[in-house]
Amino acid sequence: MQIVQQLLFVAALGLTSWLISKRIGIIKKTIQLGKAVDRTDRPAERLSTMLRVAFAQKKMFDRPIVGLMHFVIYAGFLLINVEVLEIVLDGVFGTHRLFAPLLGDFYPILINFFEFLAVGVLAVCVIFLIRRNITKVERLQPTRHRELNGWPALDANTILGIEIVLMLAILSMNAADSLLQERGAEHYPLVGGFFFSGFLQPIFTNLSDGALVAVERVAWWAHILGIFGFALYVTYSKHLHIFLAFPNTYFTNLTPKGEMSNMPDITKEVKIMLGLEQPDANEVPAEIGRFGAKDVADLSWKNLMDAYSCTECGRCTSACPANITGKKLSPRKIMMDTRDRLEDVGKNMLANGGEFKDDGKSLLGDYISEEEILACTTCNACVQECPVLINPLEIILQLRRYKIMDEAQAPGSWNGMFNNLETNQAPWKFSPDDRFNWADNLKS
Image 1 (cartoon, rainbow, N blue to C red):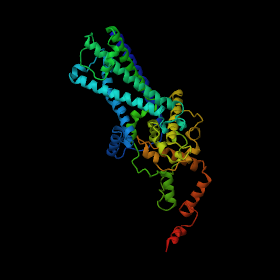
Image 2: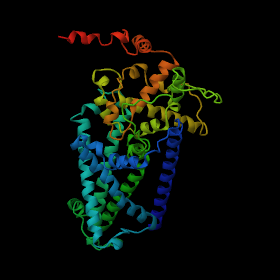
Image 3: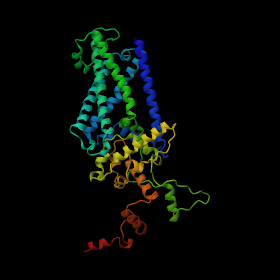
Image 4: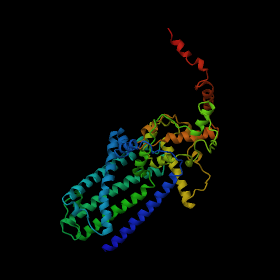
């Protein structure tokens, strides 16, 4: 019977690993569709940023209570995986509590600490479900934010439900295990009592040894198969940020937030035109394929990683002045739409042997509307608020650049501003010589 369980476990582990690696391969290929951008400078500063923001959750604590609750789940996810490692090794080798002889008296202390984390994760997940569905935090409501309708709302509740089930499974497993230890059951060596799961023991006290073994085994399999399913599910979920937050924060843009990047080729042409730079007689002029971005392949690979890293927390949207005043723009939706387009591109590539075949769609128009990108005030509030350093503004600016420079479709009021900038070096329609006339009225 034990060898059958081992074979089933190894088969489940292999299948899960294969499915996850296949999924990661597609995500990697879609990210690599983006244009090259160098984010390898200042490695020490990048490492420091990653440790502070991704590992230490610094920006989450801008809202201390929510930040603390999120940290409990985060710490639980990281540390409980030590016990998951033991379960995986037990499954492969057919052992039970493999680390107990190695750790001795420290083993029950460690398991009690894991149970403490499990109870904390359980409590926080229940609170988060209440915040989403009963007290209804505004930035998390589909009725207010259309991008959360359907799958996003279901995804958030599903992942919290899965975590609750996983924590209950591990506590039930330990409770049944402790009773079997006390009864001296074969294959269940005495390793010490577990505090939190001890509260569940009265539920199982009257069961026979065979029934207890069944409970322990069902809970063991439920927990580890749940972990496998969770790991695969995460690659399709917004919770992919659990893993991508680390590279995403490391490769963040270190330039000041108010600095907008220009197109190097255009900048050079302008400098030559103004006499600030001399053309190279031997240089062949670069051919500019497209101004700005129309589809995901026109964005940088970092923009695409941003899309996969989005947590859908809505902090960006709740701080966006355009959204607050009722306009259609939602920075969260910009990131979610970019990810949706990447998902469609990935499916296209899967269906066509790893290559993308034109499907007649584009990010601008089919996913993100002109009205949304024109509503942006470029205030950087969304960039400032993001807990994993995502930059929706870069995508908005690239889409807007394409609309105006490539398609020459700018609002009439914008065209007037552009003309004034060209002729008067200011957005207003008056001569630079009259720029300080307003100050004459201040003279006494």
